[in-house]
Image (cartoon, rainbow, N blue to C red):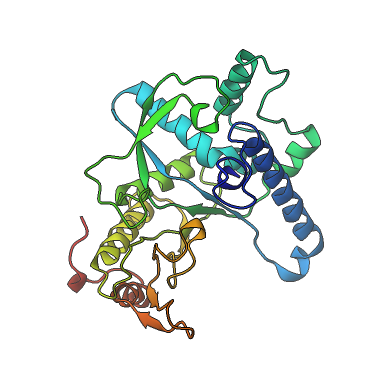
Length: 305
């Protein structure tokens, strides 16, 4: 909804970062719930399948971890990201309270006759609440967050009154937004488990690293997977988070949305100059395959700290 109906960086390319973006998300949530209810009404008995939803978020790291205002800003950041869709689906069929409070107030201050954040009807809320059998997470990176007062101009990115940045010392991938923060994955997993009261199994449905070169000896991608997967393992073993699956992004280099073939996420290299598109196994694929085969890390892999 943000890139398609907010910033216009993806199809259908509509600009409405404070209006259309919320309408699009509203319809996505309702459509998801209708599909979920239809499946359980007509197909579940014979198929015994599970239907979930995958949502994308960064981790919002409090700039001052011991400052309650910064901790609150982190929670607000997470509610405006994962909670925007997750609160209605995994909790009670409504938007997070902090979203409702801030957007209603800013809409009123702008002289609008109604809030830019739509309301669900009672019937819709009942349909939406609990419309998932598992929780999906796409996570790549993190932001440092702290509280701040932002204007009432009607912009999703300003509605949360949370300021953010990425630490310049964090290693950057081939995508400018992707800074390597393995600890952020563990933080997100714990936040999700706590926020949704441990009721849902969690699947990490996207996590990966991009580069510009597409080199086969991709040590930076090995580092990324090694440490992110280890942080996920710690969330499971040390924190008791019910992570049931992990999916690396991606199997091979691909057409990466508006960036075309310039940013490469693949475990396998693809020669896009050859009409046959031949694939070559990268060292990261071998590393990842070993983790899958051994079902974890082995001593000779070296430490993960």
